[in-house]
Image 1 (cartoon, one colour):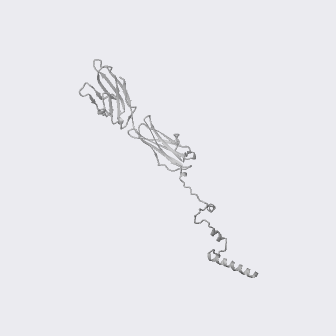
Image 2 (spheres, one colour):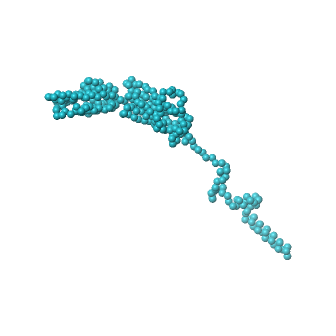
Image 3 (tube, helix red, strand yellow):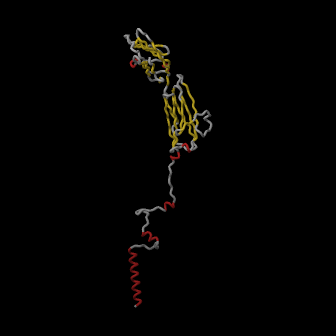
Length: 292
């Protein structure tokens, strides 16, 4: 017999295939039998009219349509499916040799999560951050890790109520009657300037179960200071020093400059220019008449 191939673990609610590998070396197969904890639950005998036979065993649910001489498909997997599984192979007369191989199978439960709460908010230096990470319904108990900007946060046994500037994490568990575990991890830290990278703080929670499950949840805490709108206020001196356009309404014009430098009662109208010219002509004539 070459051996038995089984999954590393049975996943609750899913299906699994057990394979019995054997080499008869030219002899004729008599039977293939499967046992759980010493109780036979599946039999294949090619010489019989009813080649496949199933026996009721607690926790063993066989998908007969997907099972063959050397394959047994279990579906669905329950907690009672766990146990010691053995495949036994026998050949025909005249040898009647029987060989077997066993494997221990455990049932695991894929959890829900991890989930970080509460929802992310804007923060600034000096703020205290309190976050929770929940991983529920797992088997076995998961290992939970926190990261701040990809830097691991060490677990602590100190009281969370005590003030601490360095990040600390605490974890507690709740057991289900069927053996599954709810895991709750808390992290607390005081925000410092050095925590910000590109105007934010990235916090991640990762959960690991053996070599078959690893999942993470992460949130981004933006810098509250980057959300403040800057309003530019110009002084009077800056306003007075502006450069006016050629056609601005308040642009300076030559006639306005001239009028500001003369008496306000004098108006530069055409009639005023005519009277002024006539006055100069009469004055010149009188001057010439006096000389004669």
